[in-house]
Amino acid sequence: SLDDEYTSLHCAVCPDIGLSPPDAERRARAVSLLLSAGADVHTEATGRAVIDLFFSQGCEHAILVQLLRAGASIDLPNDPVSLMRTRLANITTQHPSLVASSGNDMFRTVSGLSECSTLVSAVRDAGGWRDYVLAPRYALLRLRSLRARGRAQPTAATPEQVKRLLDPNLPNELLGTIFAYWKESP
Image (cartoon, rainbow, N blue to C red; front, side, top):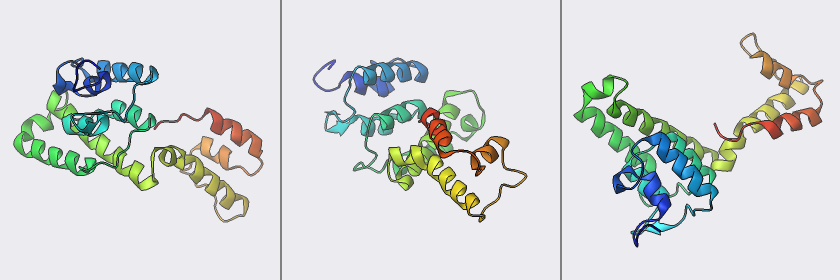
């Protein structure tokens, strides 16, 4: 811990604490290093978990993905999606001209909040991070099964790579190998 209140991870995810790097990219690298060194995403400071403090301070998509991958819970006393939507509404109402022009901090804040809100909703709908990450694989397996039974056919709009994966002649073992190399995060 840097002091009695906050851990290094708290400081890395929250720009307002004052000890974290000012830009999101450097904060994301700091979070990655701390998590790989064993930082605990469940540690509380001032009665709040890392992810709860993170949502109250702002939200960068890359950091959120790292926290979720490390096991941070999105089941918090203050609903993160509601917090983010309220912040979005306040920002767009108070600063409409700044939000409209890309390339400024306000635009990036609104974009980040929107991305994070969408991700948290999708993870919740899936039942958790692991199920969210595995959902595309399960969908592909369902489609493959339907295709093998003649109940689904690829269309002209289906990408060539997906058509190959749906091919009933593709051995299941090969599909398992493909899944092993499939990236975890969206």
